[in-house]
Image 1 (cartoon, rainbow, N blue to C red):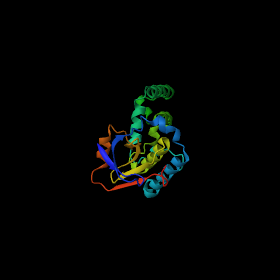
Image 2 (image 1 turned 90 degrees about the vertical axis):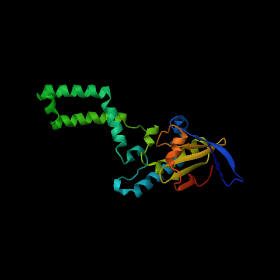
Image 3 (image 1 turned 45 degrees about the horizontal axis):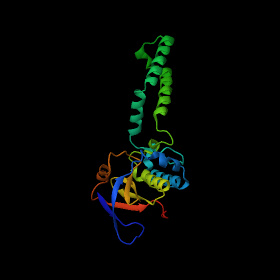
Image 4 (image 1 turned 180 degrees about the vertical axis):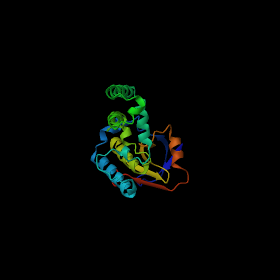
Length: 222
């Protein structure tokens, strides 16, 4: 697959290859730049814009917040709950807690779950393991703002630009947004929000015939 791009007002056009830039595989190269001042400025501006455009969710972005927590669906909650329920350590601790309460109160197992004090303790236990399985700061999942591609992939563009020392662009359609950049005469596409099997899958998702917005992430090109 090839694409003709004209970059930085260069004279003429050059035909170059296109490839997927898998963020997860290259996270070790990008991670040192997560706290870069310019990268953080783009993240803060994008997430603030999301909150201002969607006040119905009742949250305002604070620098240092976890982008994944702004996901507007149950995606992360369901995923984390599944991991807690599959955690053998959580199951063992919960079983021990139940036995302690049965011995202490004389309640049977079914009545136990109607006891407010037991529920409070079991919820605290669940919360400990919920935090354990939640995305951790510095990981790629921390930045997976699901359904927020138009905002979080502005951060992606800033991150790859700083880490790879290349001009990066925000490529947006009405369906999806990703970052794109040129390195060694290859056009790369990057998306921190979703893990794609291949480039064609991403491009198909962007949609053919969709209205396109294409602009540099930084006003000054590197």
